[in-house]
Image (cartoon, rainbow, N blue to C red; front, side, top):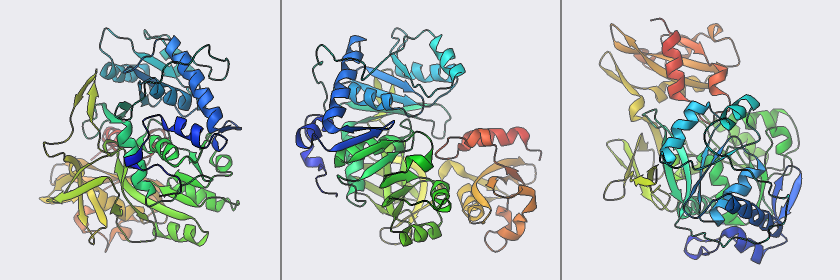
Length: 478
């Protein structure tokens, strides 16, 4: 682990931002909207925000819901709410009807809860939410000096975050983690991937996604620097040593020919070319990929892109076993359960194992290979087909940036695969059958190809399989 990183056994009882204020007050902690904050200055801003939240009624054990894309105020509210002993639910911009469904998961009918809308929200959407029945929180973190600082009610075992995942059901479930889960996740990764004071990690992923929130806990663990991106990667990457990106973003940076200060990249996404890792390594960039999920507080396994073909070794503080190809998980990063109006439904069995519904195998003694999702398997003419197997072949085509395969009903075979692809070429100009020949058995060849609809993939870290399936079933003619 990087120098001065906190170890799980010695995690302070105080918030880690307080720890760094005491131990490294003048070290640079944050860059946000062109301003630099030391740990001392950061804590002053968090104190001011906690006072404003307290004045609006936020107390220990409350849930503060934040809606929208990243903004500096979101970080202040997150840390301030935690300082007060409250937790934060984070969710993406969405129509008020969908948001209300999630809020009913969080709050009983007789409780309005606490709702904050990011300034990044589109005006029509923000106006729609403002005219709802729920009161809104307002903060101006640097607009005033508080008359007093509310007592710190933080404790590491407290509920920290609620992140929504629909899993295979399509219904939103709020995954509940405490601070210990998040710190165990961060510390396990940082035992493999170096991140230390003097380094700066770009917050380019949304906090409402576990891969974004996990960056916050790595930053706090390392006592290093964080930069909040403003949505323009070419500008945001300036002065950054660490970044979490998808392959296309890294390819864009390489194509720009600009000078990069990057030393480490953690890549996410369904298809990560080994050639990309080799190119990064030639530029001195240590590039990693992994396997993770919301319920496990982000990354579970990791490896360098140029080493091996699977998704890597299991990280510290996690345990993983495979039974009949089914992946089961337990350990110190696993969520407390699914949250509903103050009650938790455990997600693991009596022995602490969680059924991920992912399928996998060991390629070697310690390199995990993901076969697919149990719920992405279908039967065609009596044969089992995994959508991910077909997607992996399509993703190897030089013109393909991403691919999703969906089974559609077929009178003769029961179901047949259809592909949705994002390509640099016209979908109809590629001879897909020639590409699949020799790589897939013929019954696995998609019977039709559709161009990826831009409105469904925009802003998504991973492709929304369910939404793409619903879209395809509406427009596909057997």
